[in-house]
Image 1 (cartoon, rainbow over the protein chains, first blue to last red):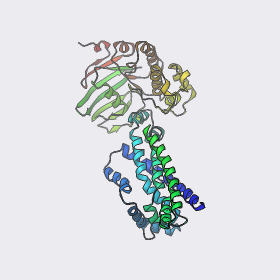
Image 2 (tube, one colour):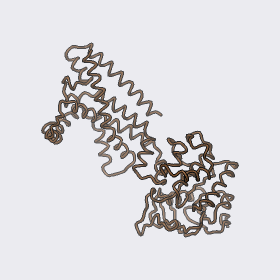
Image 3 (tube, chains in turn orange, red):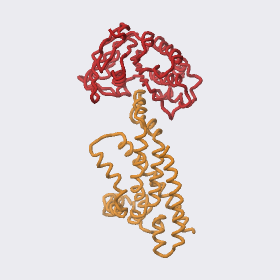
Image 4 (cartoon, rainbow over the protein chains, first blue to last red):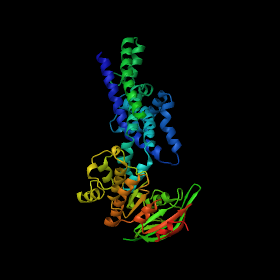
Length: 216
Length: 222
C-alpha cells in the first residue's frame, strides 16, 4: 500500500510540475497560432501536434537522442553535473512533451474565442501589445487555458511510452502507468488494479472539469 | 475649439473602396450617410484599426498616418478616444475598471471630473452585465474621455437608445463638447443630433464624400 501511495503521489506531483513547466510555452504558442499569420506556421502547428500521433516510445527515442549523454542537451547538462536520464527530471520532460499538444489546442481555442474587438479597443486606449495580452486576452481566455492545462495534466498523468524510455522503471522514477505495466508483468494484479482505479479517478475528475470549462 | 482635420486617404476593403479628400476645420465634424457608406471605416482608419493604402490622416498638429512620409502610428500611440457602436465594454472588469483601463489608477481629480460629468458615481462598483443601455453608453464615453484624447471618435452613440434615453444622453455630449473642448468625429443618421452637436458635416455615399462643409443643411439631399 505504501508503494502504491508513493507511486500515486509521485505521479501526480510530476504531472503537476510538467504541466506548470509547459504552461508558459504552451500559452505563448497558443496565442501565436490563434492570432498571427507567418511563414512556417503550418510546420509549427504540425511539430506541436507530432507527439499526439507518433508512438510514445518513438517520442521517447527522440528524447534519448537529445537528452542522452551523447545528445546535444544531455552532454551539455552532464558537463554542468546535471543528469537527466533515468531521473525524475526525465519523467517531467517526457510528461511535458506529451502534455504540450493538448494544452496548446485547448488554449488556442480559448484565445480564438476572445473577440478581437476587445483587444483593438484596449489598444486605442493606449495599451501596448504586452498589456493587451496580460489584461485582456489572458483573462478572457482563462477558461480555455485552464481547460488546456487540465487536459495536459490528464495526458501527463497517463503517460507511459516516452516515460519508460527515458526514465525506466526505477523505484525513484516509477509512475502509475509504468507501475501498472510492471505489476501486471510480475503477476501483481491487485496492485495494478488499485493503481488503475487511482489513475482513472484522478483523470476522470480532471477531464470532467476540463470539459466543463471548455463548454462555458 | 475648432481644429484642422485632414482625412485624405484611400482604404480598400475587398470590393469596397473608401476614398476621401477632406480638409476641414471644426470641433465636431459629423459623418452622415446611409449604411455601407464607409462612416465606421473612417473612424477605424483614424483609430489605427484599419490601414489605408495611401494618404494622410491628421488631427490638429498630429499626423496619425502619412504614406509618403512612412508615418503610421500604432493605435496605442494615437491618443484617440474611440467609442464603437457596440461599445465593447470589457466584460471581466467592473465599471471603474473599464473607465480607468486607459490610465491605470488615474488621478482622483481626473476621474471625479469625468464621473461627475457623466453622472456615473453610483455605478462605479457595479459589473458591466447589470447596466442599462444609457449607463453602458456613458461608461464607454467615460472610458474614452479618461485618456484625455486628442479626438473623440463616436460611432452612432445614440442610435441604439430609445428617444427618452437619447434626449438624456445628448446633453452629456454637448457638455463634453463645451466643457472639455475635445474635438469629435461623430457618426450619425439623426438630423436633430447633428444640428445639436456639429459644426461641420461630411456626407458619405458609397465610399466617397459627396458634400462637406460647415453648412449643416448639407445633410439634406440637394
